[in-house]
Length: 352
Image (tube, rainbow, N blue to C red; front, side, top):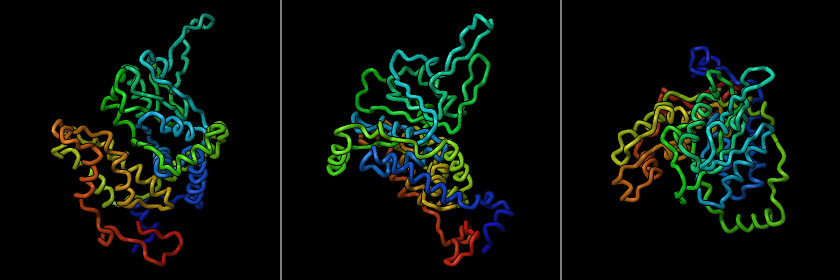
């Protein structure tokens, strides 16, 4: 079996991460996780998914009923990182220029000056995103995909890291505008917080009863640290069988009889990036099929459109993804093309 350095020289791996980068990642991510969990009790899997999306350079859609902490989760994640934060309350009268910015004529300079909108921040919280008109929702399309804003023929780069955390209520649909497919496809993952357990709700009464812990939350990581962690995630290796597994999962959604719209190639890319971030959070320098499986529902389900018959049968997109996971063969780790590291491995040697 070749070592990490030998495989890197053959193009099989990215360059070796700097010493200590993996330990720094897990340490910093642990600090952010504990900070967010101090506000959101009893939902460790939701907090972990939020961190995964952040390190995978994606955007997060939080969809759930009112009062379960959607906005609280977004604010807690934003306040745990020392970076610029802007909150947008989406309403029917919100204009695209309120998000992207507007050019104002300067009498002294006799020229137009660009006034940046609310999207010019590192963490953008979009509260109740489906209450704005489709015209206003579309103002986020360019910024979410290309991390830039084009106004009057001039392109303005957005700060890094850049993440949109949007919330929406899927129950009360009166006066709302469902997100179009192009908008949903730009969110890397969708998460539902759900109701807390009785024990977590009792703890919430103790913690939130006197004052909101969100007000006392202090940043535990700097934006520069997050950028370094993102670079470390990019260096995580994904073996060819794992990449093929992700492609097979996404391809299965495009031919499933209960779906009239499958996942896009962007969904495959998002699934792979999220798997790399999940592996890095677990302290690994390589992704496993387990990482892909754990994130498939969160990354794929919100992009899929069930057929009318499937809706009559009360089949959800999540159930279809679970069925696809069950039917799609998982790569065999014992195969020669996907070697495992030996039990006793010298420092620096990697099997992926």
